[in-house]
Image 1 (cartoon, rainbow, N blue to C red):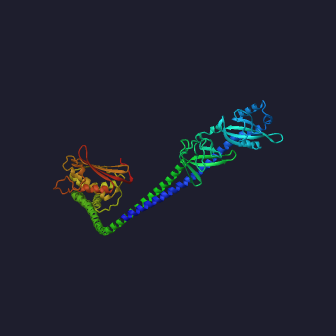
Image 2 (image 1 turned 90 degrees about the horizontal axis):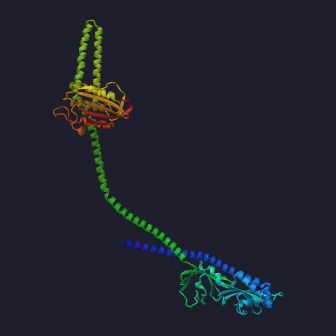
Image 3 (image 1 turned 90 degrees about the vertical axis):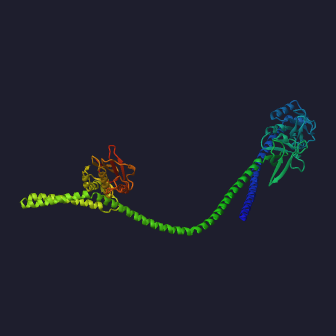
Length: 585
């Protein structure tokens, strides 16, 4: 157990180390890529700033070249200043926003100027010496008392023979050039050969210098601020502490500007680049950790399932014998249950048959009377027919024989109904004629009704009403209901039985109404062994209505019992209509 936990801890630690190394690698790669993109944008910005500065300064160079060819300037350099010389210089300075325009002699002496504050001898300045040698000269420095930062362009003035006879110097105020750049991003500045910042879009950088061998700049006070530099691949990163308007960590880029003798430099904030690299590394680490967590959970789940599977197999193996014994017992119980079901079905069939035989026993007196009357009549008609033949009255004898035939048909119908009622019937259901079954049941109970003095109200006209059921079983239900109604009216002063059959759509209802005392407990009338008959009566086990209820239920129908408002009971048998039926009148 402890070995497994230790292995899992080592695996987690190893995976965490791999994720950490991968995150560091992703951060370094993303940081390098971000620095490359930042450097590309910074070089473009630096080139644009340099081109802008050079373009602005070249306007004054072109002014110096143009003024050197002016006739008034040539006369002033050769012969001295005239009355119109200063007007030309002032007009040129006003139109070009030049700080000052000077005319020098061949020895570097100032012949004329716009401000009148220039030193009288400029021959010692390098840019003046270059111009007096016949080339364009430029330089920067203070122009006291006009400005501390000025840029000078010097152009030679030639005579007709092509010799230098003087020079024109155009002085540019650098404060006016970089004034429009202040506050723009990124921080850009331009240093001269001595390392001094002479032009910048941040005023706090002006006149800073880079000490020899130092990577950063030193302010004019001489106290260097917080600074450090490091190389990240081909890039140089400065960590600065130079105020709120300069980045704390910046990418340093440079570009030489030989046209003006300066070097352009730019500081690009790398905070967003570093943050983006951190975000990418964190995203990769999060994905790896999430994936690793899923793998760990999956492995733990698999290990748990494997352990549970081992336990389950052990339990299954342990309970196999018990299940086999239980299965054998269940098979034995199932065979016993099947035998009990067969016996139950047989008992139910026997109970139905017994119910029919019991009904026949109750109706035996009436049936005997029904058979005895035709027999006595047949005997009487036969004796009369013999006498009529002896007296020579054959027509009267034929009438008696016809009556004998009718009596025999009546006996045959009664016997046929008895046979049909007493025979066994399978459970198969067919479409049967309701009127035929009801007529047979009334025939079977005719003797019982007549003996009890019950008057029958029934429309005996044939009607085509088909229902689904069994002819014999449905006849048994009707016989039981008629017999119970006759027995119930034994003590009633008025004994009437009304039978009606109605067809309503897909249902057919048959109602039996008597004038007896009604049902004592309607909710228990269909319970087995429930009866209201006296104990000394030959019938009265209380199974007739229970059997009838089961038979009607097997047909998909219903049987209901209730009391009438005016007295007496009413039983309704509801059956499913067959294919062919006729609506009741």
